[in-house]
Picture 1 (cartoon, rainbow, N blue to C red):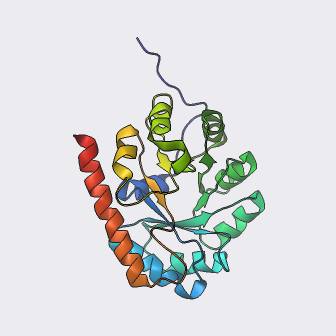
Picture 2 (cartoon, helix red, strand yellow):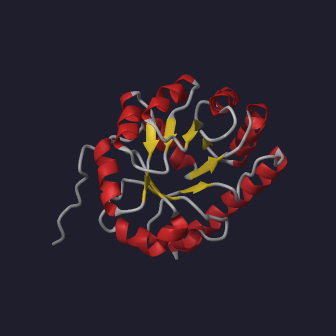
Picture 3 (spheres, rainbow, N blue to C red):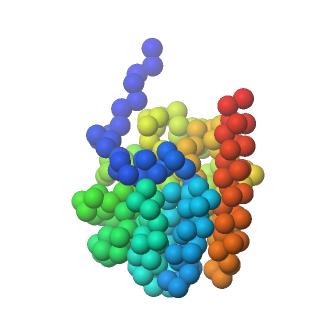
Length: 226
């Protein structure tokens, strides 16, 4: 008889993030978006079916873009910040209306600061040690980054030891056509970057790319069930 896989600490995920993730497990990364364009792109994503949008902090005036998207979208959307490298940025994200902190790393100070202020957190992890430490510090989902390097076999191996209720979210190199193998391996959702949005593209292009991802997810889910 196999022992039950216990989490290293009580797992109490951010309820609003989990609801948005259940509605659509695709996280839009609007790296490079400007405040003048942010709301239109956010609306295009929402209308296509997305419910989680992040603005990386290495974008122009990111807090203004977060505020613009938050104001434009209904309450069931989650808006947050990506590339949050230091805990000092967490309060600014919250002040702008952000509810989610996404990181390329798993700095404990950033994770604990996010959770202390009532925000959801998705730290980037690339090893089991990083993954379990992130969960111990209060992570809501695990951003498997970079997905190109980790691949489906790593997702499968992690899924065998990480509790099923913890979402695994590969990020990096995800396209509408390659989600199926990751889902089959045990991934729960995906973060989507330059294949979804590039700076300067039109909201119509964002909408078209978003619909392609929604359709790709539908196909991938059907394939993973076979």
